[in-house]
Length: 137
Image (cartoon, rainbow, N blue to C red; front, top):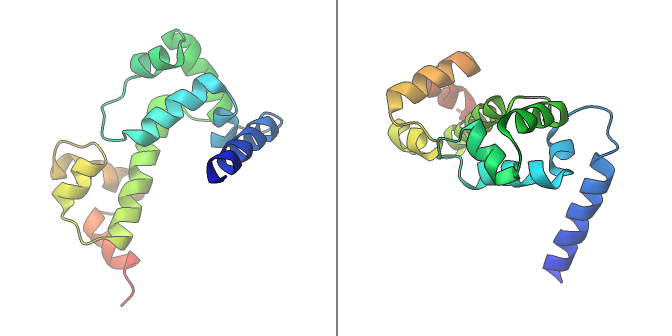
């Protein structure tokens, strides 16, 4: 029963999302080809996804996929991946006691240093400072 409800919800979202005037993840999920790529990103955020790999999984050429993804979602595929990684990292920093190295690996960075640099550039502060601000006193 729960699986049936899940399928009905997904189908309803896909049908309604295709009518949305503005790009976003729901519009991306309403397209089966793009939904596959978005799902792959979410299932394996650690992977070093390339536009070519995502396009292949979607059954499209690299340029057609990038254009369609950007039009539907409002972001280039790689930008979407980076934002998703940062969202997971922020959530982990808010709710976990993991080390910086563990969080970096969780979101696809090979080193804590590379992760810290990327996080600081995107969020505006280092991960350690973000964690302190996010943790109630």
